[in-house]
Image (tube, rainbow, N blue to C red):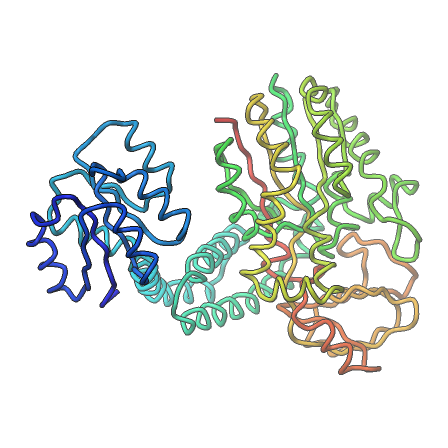
Length: 517
């Protein structure tokens, strides 16, 4: 940060002329004073980029001066310089939010490093991250265009998310555009991969298939139920992998991640199909046939997931899991607070399943409410809103309590969502469902090149509304739009977060196993 303005406060400032000359030769402007009172006057009368502050001074001490500076200018970086190595002094300074802590005697290179760390950190990190992604771009592109299997696609998606979370901090907007182009390329190739393989996965014609919604509990959860540990499985509806990554640091204050897995949501990637399949251990058509009393179809009224607890109970019985368990669905703040109160009673269970619905509601609210659209205008803002919710939700308190009590934790979801942009025209009768990422009905009219069509729903174990009904799924970041009132419809739904179709974001979703620290 060339030309940065430094205030150096030290009662022996005359002995630091060599340091000050060194900094001025590097292009910094340095003002000095030998006491805390003058320092406060100076920071109040003109702006500074950073303050170097001696801890031991007559009159106002360094700590007292620091506290006053931080009260008046909380964003101003202050570097404490002291002869003392006492732990209490360090703790007091750190507690007062210093930016760095140096022990005398300091040399010019230490000072320069502290300046770069505090004033140029974002720029240097941005340049380094941009350079690293530029080096990774071609190898990543070659992988995307290769013949990948389901686990390699999961790795590709994780890599893209890692770069997105790093590059979003970059000051180079051009590099973000390049990443978005690479994500779009990956999304297009992934859609072809799903079209070519999905039916074989579902029908069992291949053993090389990923963990899917209906096999998740059997393959991942059930083997762990024989232990004496209390396991809490928290399913956050509609939680994408990138959203998991932004709340992970908070959860890691109480837990350590022992496995960071992903699995594939079934199609359609919506709660009605994907989550019912998770809790039943069956595909939708199998649920409809085996437990018709627990299945609500597209034409039925009412909540489509009101029998998850019953399906889970049947699932556990089928696999001989004679355990003590609970199932709780949190749809609002009141239920969340009641759950917190009930946690001590749940600690004696082998398994506690908690469904938390906020992120899905956030996605729908963003579509319907203009203020939420403005707050979550892009992917980064959507993640930020998720993080803000989590930090202030009862769920954070629940997880902290579980960490203190030594419970094991699993965090997962039922599907993700994607920000849609490109409309795809479709025609259907009045009985066609309303979802923007998939349609089911009879006599659907569409461009076959733009969708993934399943003429016979039973081929992928989906219920059939009538004998001639079919399913079509949007790919990439497309969404279905009707020709009637087309422009209004497109403008309303473009740039909203939707789910139900085929994309990396909707299908490759987190299953995270954690143990208390």
